[in-house]
Amino acid sequence: MMASHPITSRDGAMIRVLLSVGFLVVLVSCVQGCGPKVDKDKVCREGRYGEACLEYGRCVRSDSTMGGTYCNAFNADDCRTSTIACKEQGRCGKAKKDNPSECVALSEEDCTNSTGCKLKGACGFKDNVCQPTKSKHCRESEACTKEFECHYNDGSCYNHTMRKN
Picture: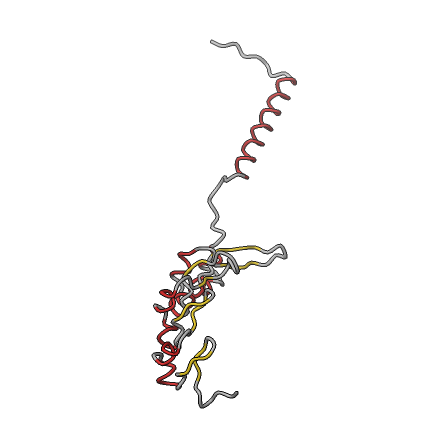
C-alpha cells in the first residue's frame, strides 16, 4: 500500500505549470491541423460561385487582401472539365504565365475539338486563344451557313456584305 502525501502549495504550483504547458502543446498542435479539415475551395465549387467553377474552371479560392473572395482556375483538371471555357472555347489547359488564374487553349487540338470551331470557325490556335486563322475555318463553320460569315480577316470571320471599310 502506498502512503499518501498531502499536496503542498509547491506541488499545486507545479501541477498548474504542467497543465498550462500541456494546454499550450495542444493549442499549438491544433493551429497546425487539429480538428476537421476545412475545404476552403468549397465556396467556389458548390457555393454562389459554383457556376464559374462548372463553366470556366474557376474552382480554387483566393482571398484578396481587401477582403474579397475570388475563384480562379489554378487546376488543369478543372479547366478540362469546364463546360464553356473548354468545351465551347477550347480553353482546356492551365495558363503558366500571362494570366495564371484563367484556363487557356494550349494547342490547335484544343481548338478543333471545341464547339467554337464548328459554330464560329475558331479552329486555329494563336497566342493561347482559339480563333480563325485561315479562310477555311470560316467557310466550314455554321456561322458561314447561317450568318454568311464566310470570309476571314485578322482572326475573325465576317459577312463581307456587312463589312464596312
